[in-house]
Length: 372
Image (spheres, one colour):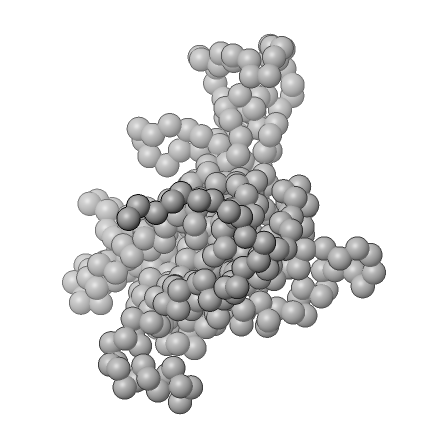
């Protein structure tokens, strides 16, 4: 018998939001880890808010929402608020009830300005990494370093002469601008939209765009990111950022793998002075890596594992939405990059832990579930 297409809105729901989320949903494991990190940052949050005035969006809820934006590739905060309004999974993860009102987009953005800074994002990143280290997912000896270009939130039209000379800007919202034949460089020109962005290209046959560079140091066991630096796009930025991260994270006797762009005498010698092995891919001519190092088994393994750092860049640009930043200024871009890589590590922590737990068999899983 055919059923009737009767539509009647219910006034009440007898199924709780908790019961609507599948027991094996990956966000359940993720939220346990996220809640632990946010609880440990309570004192840091308290320092950023006044004891008087109107209550703002809870920082824990705001950061959970931003984490969902990264994990589910939500392209804007306006769309994120729309998703929170009708997506029960998002509401549950953030901590909103079924009947709770969703924040205005402008209110959410104003509160995000206070939290998504480089300092707080690095705190969040560090605490996520500490969980991975506690789970023994991070190598403390073998690392890889690399950098990738992040397109700035500015166009070629905004890149004009610093002294204000040149033709007057045509009228209109989006006028045509002809700069063919004009010699433009960072020494004489600057973006009016994002003054800290620099015109840069990495390859010989690639186009120049206004960009930043995000650098990462990954460990070679599971490919988790252990340090992040975001810098203006310059020709020396990769080497300088690599030295800074290696100094912070790599102990003496460790090794660092890198591509041919790091095959420079200054970089290799700098690592040798710190007692770190430079496992850098060799250029065909004039390589700074000697033949004895290149013949070692550790060198070959480092070059093989080095490519795993590219997975992190691929993830944050396709899933994390960092192919082109949504923020203006180096400090905000650095905060966004740190938060995206923290989300990447957070995803890796839960995935690696669960896969390791499943490999140990049903008896181990039963004991873990019971708290033994």
